[in-house]
Image (cartoon, rainbow, N blue to C red; front, side, top):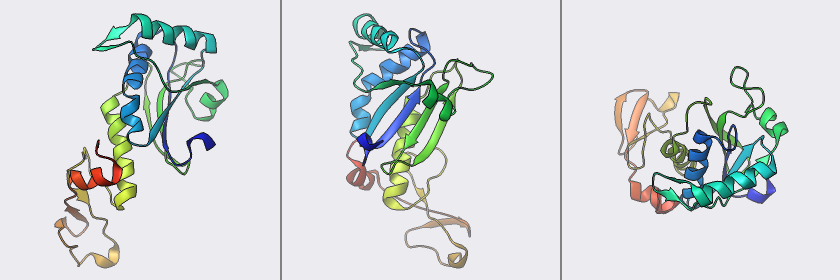
Length: 199
C-alpha cells in the first residue's frame, strides 16, 4: 500500500491465464492504463496462477493477440500472485470455483480505504466504461461533497444532500422534486478542473 500513497488504486482479479475472457480483460486494462493514470489511479491485477504462467501469457498477448483494434499491448501494471490475498478479499467464491479468483474489482482511495467493489461471475467479462465511471463518481463525490443519482455521468445534475433541519430551505440553484430530493447542476468543465481534463 505504501507504493500507492496519494493515488487511487483499482485492484482486480482474474480467474486464469490463457483463457479467452481474461485475455480480453487484460488487453483492455493494458490498452486503457494511461487513461486510468490520467485520473490519478494505478491498476494492480491479481491471479492465483504462477509467475511463469503470467509471463508467458502476457508475452502471447503482446505478440499474437489482436482484438477490437487492440494489438501489441504491453501490460504496464503489476499482476500479483497471491492465493492468500484472493482469499482475504473474498475473490474465491463458493459456487464459482475453489481455486480460481472471480472477476472482482476493488476501488481503493488515496488514503487506502476500500470505497467500492464490483463482482462479475466467471462467465461474464467486465464493463470497463462502468469501472471508469465508478472511479470518476468516487472522485467527484470527494471533490465536491455531493451525492450522485443513478446512471450519473459528468455534466449531469447532482444530488444536494438535504438534512432534516434544512428541509424548508431550497439551496441556491437547486431544483427540488420534494422535500427530500433536490438536484443542482455541476458542469463537466468544473469537474474537469478538479479531477483532470479527461473526465
